[in-house]
Amino acid sequence: MASRLPRPVPTDGFVTPTSTTQAETETVLLNHIPDKSRPETLPVLQKNAHMQYLVRNLVQGFPARYVSQDASQPWLLFWTLQGFSILQVGLDPGNKQRAIDKIMTWQHPGGGFGGGPGQAAHLLPTYAAVCSLAIVGRSGPGGGWDQIDREKLYNFFMSLKQPDGSFLVTHHAEVDVRGIYCLLVTATLLDLLTPELVDGTAEFIASCQTYEGGFSSSSQPYYSLDSVLLSSPRPPLGEAHGGYTFCSLASWILLQPFVNAESDISKRPEINLKNLLRWLVQVQGTEIELGGFKGRTNKLVDGCYSWWCGGSFALLEGLGLGGSQNTRSRDDTSPDSSAGTEECWDDIDDSLFNRKALQEYILYAGQHPAGGLRDKPPKNADAYHTLYCISGLSSAQHHVFPSSSRQTEILGTWVAASDPTVTNPLRKHIFSDSLSWIEEEGGSVIVGGKDNRVNATHPVFNLTMTHCEGLMAYFYKQKVPPRILKSTSS
Ligand code: FPP
Ligand code: ZN
Image (tube, rainbow, N blue to C red):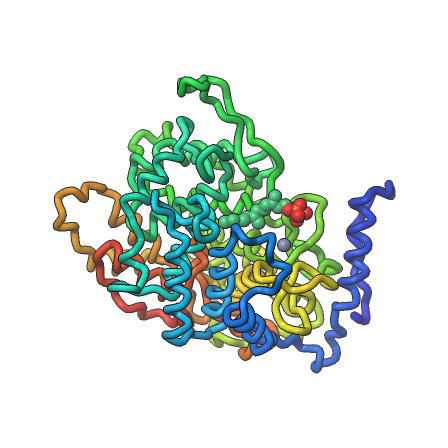
């Protein structure tokens, strides 16, 4: 327990279910706030316990309570594999091959991947399957990469396209920015991103920004049944939420080569970055909430938003907000300095969010004592929260930013396609924009000391840089120059 009690989040005194659950959460979290005057309370990332948790799920299979996730099998695998990558664990060839063989059973004969064998293709498991292949797959027979039917995948994507630039998540289903993010990531990684595919998509994403500044799941369609575009504006559908905000913002970044290709600046769609930043900073919890993030206004902190919201700050840098001069830590001459001994958060660095506080939430409240990570105590760990807590920890530890010098290097080795059917003039921008994210040398802040360090992850894709480079170099037929700045990606 802390020697000085942090202040409760203020209320107007009118008791509601919201104020009651908030107070209950504060009481639980208070028990996890350490006495910082005692050095033995320095938080330890229980890497071994988390690794064992992931190994159990991978090797023994998921426990029976995951039965409801039968349509999320690619996700369960991705959360596990990417968890290993961030925890700096490589897989042996046998486990890799078993994973590849399993992933390929999820590919639908009509293109794209479903949530399990024989299930309909859907944008969300397609992202999870392709990203899993980035981690465990390889080129050549049985390696997975050459078994992805890219032509059918592209046709599947086009079949989901709506007149307003959005996409259904699967046939006969709804539009959701999560699906758009999954489509854009997959298309970017596999060299399938074309002007035809994303025509109108940036406009759609912009229409999902709410009055609060964050993004909602979708916006009101403005087309009629006979595909004629109506002139009425499309209000966002629903509430600003961290998950949708991450997906929208990452999509917005992936769409920048197309937005910037419009020479008439007045025709370029826009989002309100100032409102977005204001919304994002206000969803970080206060001291009594241990600096965790909540997904929406007036709701509870939860470990998974460490990534969806905490990770969104790096994305803002991709749009020029923040930047190295703002996010460079005080100790930028000593990369892995321990930041765990301070009394309170007064000495925060210049980041747009409190990186040390977020690490404290994850380390003190997010870790389940038996391994794996969670939403909040006293909940159990699960595969989803395990990945997004450690991904959030990674984004709070490392300063990963888009580097113009790295981009120049990548463009310097770019080789134009020899195949005359490859006509997309933006390919090299898509490739170099995606791979120009690097970790700032000396920019890490590791709460609890260097043993708590995890790998950096790509802010848009949530894959290590090494895995992004491997997959993209293969599909774009390029060589990526070695990274000269210090990086911890495995
Ligand atoms: C509300 O849950 C949460 C949602 C409606 C969806 C959130 C979306 C994501 C987490 C993004 C997922 C991204 C991909 C790529 C699939 P809730 O009401 O239980 O939680 P809350 O109270 O914290 O809002
Ligand atoms: Zn959660």
